[in-house]
Amino acid sequence: MSSGQDELTPLISPKSVALVGASPKQASVGYVIFENLANRFRGKAYFVNPKYDVVEAWGKQFKFYKSISEIPDAIDVVIIAVPAQVVPQVLEEAGKKGAKAAIIISSGFAEVGNKELEDELRALGKMYGIRLLGPNCLGVYNAFDGFDTVFLPAERAGRPPAGPLALISQSGAVAASIMDWAARRGIGLSIMVNYGNKADVGDVELLRYFEKDDRIKVITIYIEGFKYPGEAKRFLDAAREVAKKKPIIAYKAGRGAAAQRAVKSHTAALAGSYEMYRGLFRQAGIIEAANLRDMFDMAKALATQPLPRGNRVLVLTDSGGMGIQAVDALEALGLEVPEIPESIRRDLRRELLPFSALGNPVDVTGSATDQHYKVVLEALLPTAFFDMALVVTLMQVPGLTQNLAEYIIDAKRFRKPIAVVNFGGSEVVQSFTKTLEDAEIPTYSTPDRAAKALWALYEYAKIRGVVRP
Image 1 (tube, helix red, strand yellow):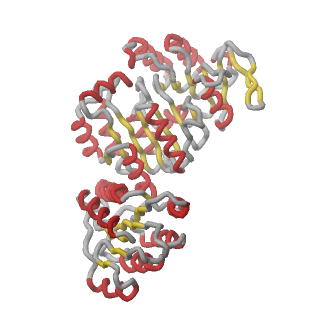
Image 2 (cartoon, helix red, strand yellow):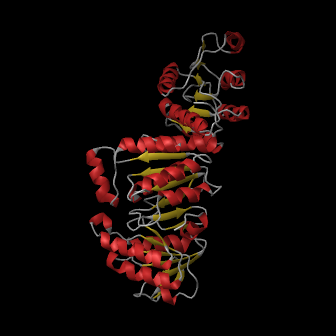
Image 3 (cartoon, helix red, strand yellow):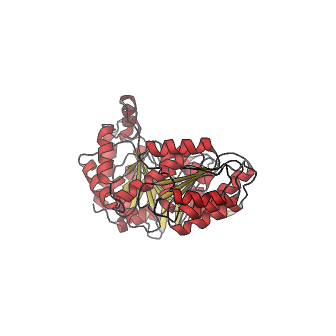
């Protein structure tokens, strides 16, 4: 099968869908997807369940069809949420109907040893030219057009707003928790695809799809293991090309022996040697994350910040302790924290408090004002001595106000990456963080997270050839 974007469009961004296994019974899989499609999908949705004729819900009436063949219009994708043994029959009906894709939510296939049934699905897909997602998956969440096959209620698993990030996930539960986490923080995760057992569509095709979607700026991947012979090579070839156009960040789970056994029972994949995956990521130009939080910390920076021209970081802080932590974290990652040139120090002494520290970090101290940050950013960030800035703003300091956010946002005109550390839980801290994030300044609670985000920008600058390794 080809891997062109057009071929996956009916699967990820369909105009018409049929849900087989739709149900008015609350707390069921068929009910949640029915609710998602009935209330948020912007295309045409048809519901199939022979037990019902008309269902009243949310102040409206919905016609239920006895079978796919009764639906009067063409269907892009069929969502299948029925017991495993019935799935081949439904898939065959979808094929005769001319559906272009199927999302098989149902479980009970290769992940529990029922490989023959999964092979039957794959054969039917090929026979009718249907691209398959799953089985044993959550399917697709697409914030752009409201297409949502996630069978977890939105009040328990939040739906993130549209934004520059896409997620490819082998695990449904992990994908749902990431979506919920992103939704609570307002992180723009536009499209999530969970492929489960990967009977057909997997990482390779999805990478190619997101490569050509200009709305997506960063691709994140949660991967447990490859499943088919030659898949690692195809993944490497695709990722190597995609990474030249947009960043890919991957988190590989299943690193130890016990975890590798768990991977096999989860999605019937083979975790394989972790060292093999690390080498593959390096060859492909993929930035590897240590965990899920790490992945989205880096993604946030890569989606919003320009690439640096080098690895020299200005650290500006109102806390000596936080400044030291920042330097430790930056140097551990191989980034430089050079001294401030004496000529610039002389100028800063005239503007800052006499007890300010003018090395690097520049510590404007707990007596700092907004203006002190402005002076340092304008004196140092435009120079050739620094390629990016890590700015610590502990808003517990009485001289700092919301205006500081405007000064930092204004520093974007210097076209160098900025990451801010803002730690605390007061309304002032939260409001300050929101102002910066709304203006696309990535903000983190600890210096090591901000340092890792700047490191990712530098790594991707090397991958793109903006700087030399």
